[in-house]
Length: 354
Ligand SMILES: Nc1ncnc2c1ncn2[C@@H]1O[C@H](COP(=O)(O)OP(=O)(O)OP(=O)(O)O)[C@@H](O)[C@H]1O
Image 1 (cartoon, rainbow, N blue to C red):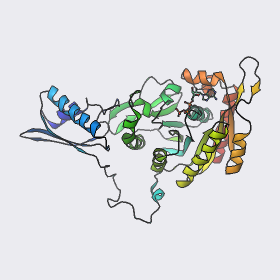
Image 2 (spheres, rainbow, N blue to C red):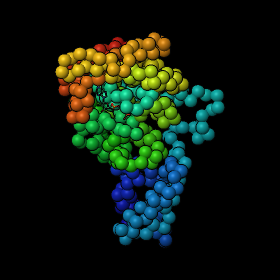
Image 3 (cartoon, helix red, strand yellow):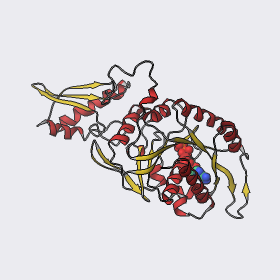
Image 4 (cartoon, helix red, strand yellow):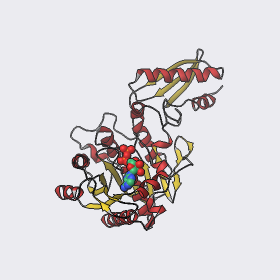
């Protein structure tokens, strides 16, 4: 057997919890043969000894199944050196955000964020992408919500991205939007704790190894919250700005401030706030009720001195549209929520001229 054939065997070994193999993840560093058998060197950034041991076992078993012997499976757990990076690390007095890279395939990159989960961030990101597309913009949507990647469901994507090799991945496409999502690569019931070490690797791949068509806007659906994961994600590339999604309750609004602070740390302007589930529209009589509270988004936007880009009502139709894989902007473009999304898109286009 030669190295290429061993590499093919390693392609059958998925990283625990993921539907992607070690080779596609770029974890295989070296394959060598000695009199004793094969020595496989992997690079896996993880401190979870139990998982690393399970991985070693999987590699050994996969080789044995094909009649080959693995003499050593060596796993380097230090982060791999990124090409072109100074090996001694950044100079002490340098601002780390000076290294943020511009994403070369999009004129503008906008992050959609929320201080906490469940406020409808992904619904907003998906409909915003659609609303921009309906105004003639070419759009990509990158779902980086490692905890609950929902973009494939929101768009009803059945055909996942085509992975030609480790460095050639074609994004999925639906309603003219280019789509990449953690959801295409993560097994649904895999423990969240296993996902952490791979987040940055996937983001790097989404940015460098995906064959994107040039686009006007790239929308990032960030994971909810304002912790380290979010911070390191937005550190990866230069954003034009962020849209913070909130609901009108005071508690959710407190998170808006945290979100704004996070973006300030990475020198990213907050383009505005979107208040979701602002009011309830009765499906029978059309009456509007402010079931949470009224005017919270408005107050918060004035306090932070950023625009309130728009309010989206809580309606059955918004939810049903998402559940059936066709965002409301596409399924009912004349509906009130769709019109509100369209106004938000118009504001963003004005804020970010070509
Ligand atoms: N304006 C709305 N009207 C009715 N339902 C909505 C609205 N916005 C979001 N939803 C529903 O609320 C649920 C949560 O929405 P979504 O997944 O977009 O939230 P999220 O903030 O991205 O959540 P996560 O914590 O998973 O990131 C979904 O079932 C969605 O259809």
